[in-house]
Amino acid sequence: MKKALPRIKEIRWIDSIKKNGPDDIFICCANSEERCKGTVERLAPKYKARSVFLLRYENQNSKKTEQHIHEMKEKLEEIGEVLEIYVDERRPLQIISEIVQSMGKHILDPLEQRITIDISAITKWHLLILLKALNLKNLIRNIRILYTEPEDYITDLFQPLSFGIREIFPIPTYYGNYDFSREPLLVLLLGYEGDRALALYEEVDPADCLLLIPKPAYHKEWEGRTEEMNVGIINIVGKTKIEYIHARNPIMVSQQLYGVLSRPEYQTYNHIISPLGTKPQTLGLYSYLSTEPENTILIYGEPLRHNEMFYSTGIGRSWCLPFI
Image 1 (tube, rainbow, N blue to C red):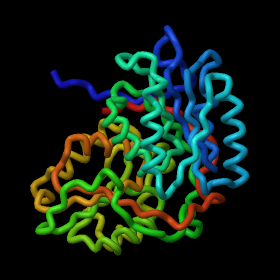
Image 2 (cartoon, helix red, strand yellow):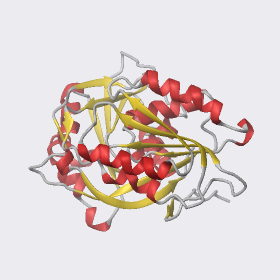
Image 3 (spheres, rainbow, N blue to C red):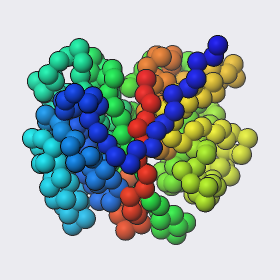
Image 4 (cartoon, rainbow, N blue to C red):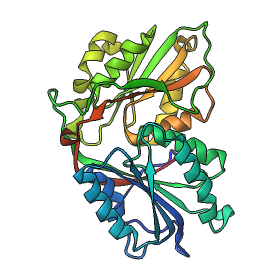
C-alpha cells in the first residue's frame, strides 16, 4: 500500500510538543512584517519553553520592526528566558554556528529533544544554512516547524517588493559538485519579485531555465499573481518552461523537485537553483538536497533593499509543516 503523504496542519492554538513538559527551545525571528508576530500571538497561555531565541537582523531597525520586537518580547518573556540574538544579514554563518552550538546546552534530554522553530521571518538562505547546521549537530530530527503566512501581499507592477540586486552569490554550505564540462540549467522557484528573477537569469546566462511556480496559491484569489509578477522572465524563457510545485507542503515540494529534475533531458546539466518562492518551498528544497543530487548548487540574489511599504500586510493563517 502506498504510504500517505504527511499533511500540513493549520494551527490556531500552539501547545508544547509534549503534554508532560515544556519545549526545550522556541526559536522565532522579528522583522518589519506584521506576520512575524503571528505564531507568538497564537501560543497557548500555558505554553512554556526553557529557552527562547529571538532573532533580529542588525540592519533592520525601522519603527515597525522595533514595535514588533517589543510586542513579541512581552509575550515571550511569559513563556521562558528570552535570548535576543542579533544576526548580520549579509554574514550570518558565525552567529548561526554559535546558535546551534549553544542549543545543545538548553536541551534536557538529547534523546527526546523538543525544539520548535517559527520560520515565518527568517531569510530563506539563512534558513537553509540553519537547517544544515542543525543536521550536522543531530538536532534536526523531530523538530517542529511553524509558519505564519501574511494576510496579503501588496502586489503592484509599479511597486516592486524589492529594489535592485546588490550581489549574486552561492549559498554557503550548498556549493555541491560542479562539473565544468556541463552546461548550466537555472532552476528558479519563483515568488513575487520578478526583477530579482530576471537579474539572476541575465547574470547566470544559462543554457536552459526552469520556472517553478507555486500552485495552488495560498488563496484562490492569488492564483495567477506569480505569473503576472514574473511576466518579463516568462516572456524570455517561454511558458513551456513553467512547472508547478506545491506552495505549502514541503514533502510534496521535495518529491516534485525530484520528479522534474531527474528527467533525462535535465540530467546532462549542472543544476543551479535559486529559492525565490515560499518558505515552505525552501523547506522542501532542503529535503530534496538532503538526497545529495549530483552537480547541484544554490545561488541567491540579494536585493539592495526591500520595499517595506509595499511588502506584506496583516497576519494570515499559521501552519505546522511536515518536514524531512
